[in-house]
Image 1 (cartoon, rainbow, N blue to C red):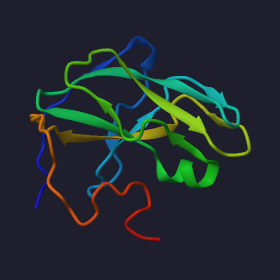
Image 2 (cartoon, helix red, strand yellow):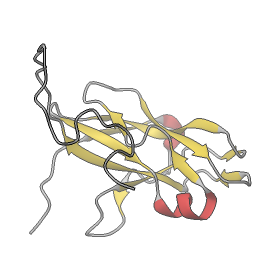
Image 3 (cartoon, rainbow, N blue to C red):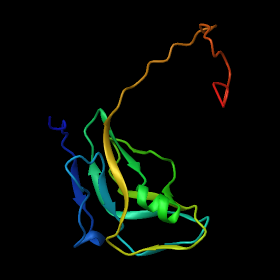
Length: 149
């Protein structure tokens, strides 16, 4: 069964000339790989917004989530902060990937190397109803770690 598709318009920015635009690496991939538009080095504990070289127009009713690449996380301790990050349908600026180096060594990437992935997703909005009391549950107000070991 083929995956459902949405039309996302993409604009290549001048500093992305010659770079691949986001693309799926395999037929079963959920995320499109994103490359960096510039060389960078992240020192241990450092974070930065890495330019992608493109802007997108996401249809209303959808978002695009920015997620880390598992290989970078496992091998180098490099991950995306604010994960999954959300690109809203009304944002038209350059997509930037917030990376952090949680590892113990500097991490460098050259222009054109894969740094993250993008996953489009439908958005559901909530209507909040203010009430005086909430219904009881078995868990109640138990917080972090309260449901098990």
